[in-house]
Length: 358
Ligand code: PMP
Image (cartoon, rainbow, N blue to C red):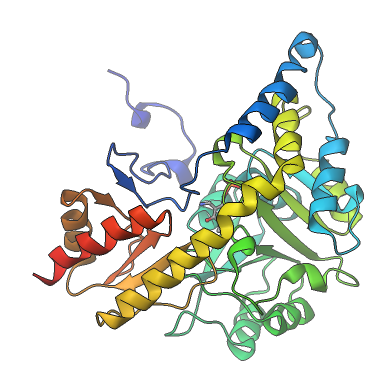
């Protein structure tokens, strides 16, 4: 039998495993920060109609520039943005890959502040970009001084900031982003996949876009919109950045079906985003209850919570799984991450956590 090792694969990919959380058949799945609420019936109907209307024309390529969808996304965001400031792709992962293809690649370096989203270094690997794992503070925060000194030390072509940060839930003060923009020689990408879940008073990097053409904010419909299966992510930046990613995007990368489905979802955003308040409530309930029980818990502006466990987190992860609840072991010694979902899922998680203290 032929194995990967028999193939003339790139040396830097040899021995690597593909990214992926376990997709296990467990009753309560709180491990990938999805939105637990299914698409409401009225939105299912609207998406069905929108997709059906495209079917006869599937002999033709879709709008390569996805202009109508980009205009709808700009309208959703506000902040005076237009279609020219927005670019869309199959998930924000693809967006970030395009950014690295355009602004990094062989001979160039990207910097992230770990622990952060584990796809950032993998996207660097896939695009032949060097990766520097920067550090965060003991509380998982990032101060202006700490961020600035690390950027100065490494001269990265791309800096990844993640706010709210996965897996910690920590949001960044715009002052940190502004300071990084002042000293970074290259592009500054702020991954705001979880922005809609932020607590009142937490600010978005969208505010910093005017006057900062090297700033890129990436967002997704996978989380708050509950549209992870639809695969729609986007970036917001100076229109020149949109010109840059068009040099590397595949032609017709966004199918007519994806564009139609995403537009229908955006048209019904009130119904889809109705889950956000309910999820925030569960997040805050998990934070409060785990703290009451003596766990250390990172402040969260996202739809998930990072919490400490006694002993080996892999053992705790297995015990929770045996109790029917799948959470995420992100490889941080002594910590696990749980997604906030429905009230019943929170009940199941908090009940399962009792087994750890026995
Ligand atoms: N950024 C962060 C921080 C994430 O956690 C995720 C999803 N796990 C993504 C981006 C990617 O989301 P998508 O490709 O579905 O838009």
